[in-house]
Each structure stands twice: as structure tokens, then as C-alpha cells.
Length: 265
Image 1 (cartoon, rainbow, N blue to C red):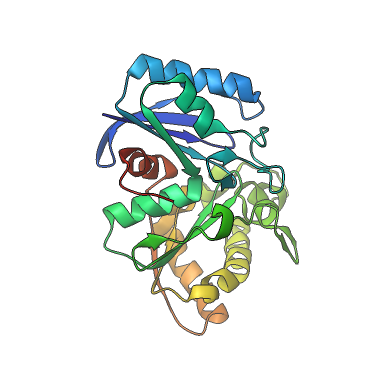
Image 2: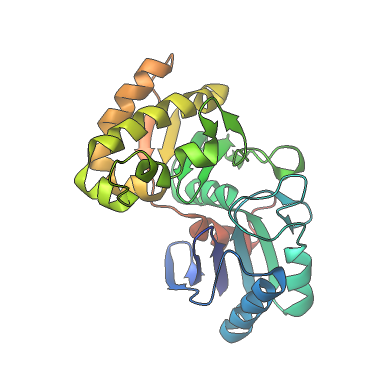
């Protein structure tokens, strides 16, 4: 049995099972501002409680080998810990093997595991903005495992995290309504966000010009309304038209594959 964790910028979840068949649960005691010691104890408690054979952990921000979370040279803006040897410390405390990886690398691996696409770009707006690439069946991790880490990278309009996170919709709404309400109503501010999204992600897509581009996170839940506007905006930005797809595969699903030991970063 595999235990998978997804430690996010606003919440955390864990699940028991396999990538295709699992039960998932909210980690009610999690807080993205909690100390590293508290996070370590929380994960240990759940691992001891579930008694899995293997554990995979998805974490936001860069993961330097061998499993150092949010190194000070490139800290994650979405969690408060840095230079944390999470993989080493968990493996010291619990019996099953623990493997950890950056959240978007996990999500990309989940897509490779469950879809027929082997070369693609994954764009994932949420609390922040995530980006990953797969080429010929492998997740591109790059030097020091930091490929695709754009959280604090600057665009002409601000950092990618600030401009492309879902909360950016709220900042551009005169009534400051939450993103999900704006998406439910398909307000004009949503289409303005899609225009910015296409303009800023087109250079990322052009870098490898993959045949397929996946859109994850909450935007995937509104794909029927958003696909055509996004296709039209990207056609103005790209020299070709990729196969644009939504995906409901999350970093949590990819953490199962990581935990299984079938992939190595």
C-alpha cells in the first residue's frame, strides 16, 4: 500500500491506495505557516497511523537533491520552511521508504503514468503558478531539480506567481470577489485573466514546442467554457497550434507514482 501526500500552499491532502484507486483526506491540522518541526511531526503521525509500505510526498517549490525542501537559494513563496532535509528526516523517523519531489514534477509524472502523452507542457495555476515539462516519456527536471521553477521569476507585469495565480482575478475585480465565484459566473475579469495567461505562458510553450499542452488546477474544472477562449488567445501568440487539454491529475496522484519507486528524479 502506498501513502501519498500533497503539501500545498493553502492546504494539504493525503491518500491511500494507487494512482487509479485511492481514498483522499484533508490534513485538517496543516498550516502553510507552520514550523518545519511541526510539519515533520504531522507527517510522521499520519505515516505511523496508516502504516503504508511506501510513501511519496509532493511539496511546492524547488527540491534540491537529496530531498531538501525550499533551499535558501531558491525558496518557495508558498510555504514557510526552507533548507529542510525533509526526505532524510522522515526516513530517519519512519519505517517505510519516503521519497519527495516538487509538486509539478509529481503532477507531470502522474500524467505520463495515466495518459497517452509522452511530450507535453503542464501549466497549473492555483495558490501560485506551476509549470513542468515532459519529453519523450521523462519529466524534465534540469540541473539541481529546478526546471520549471518560476514562482519568483519576473514577467513584465510582476512575478509569475502573482500574475497567474487564481487570486489575480480577485485583484482585478472591482468587487474583489473570490476566484471561484468569478469562474462560476464567467465574468469579464475571467477572460481578461485568460488573455494575460496566454500572453505569459506562450513563451514557456515555445521553449519546447510540445504537441500537447495540459492545463490543470481549478481552470480544468471550467474547461468547457475556457478552452475556446484560451485556444484563440494562444493562436495569436504561437507559431503553431498545440493540442490543448485539461487534466484533473494533481500532484497527489503523481506522489503515488513517486512513492511506488517506479520513477527516479
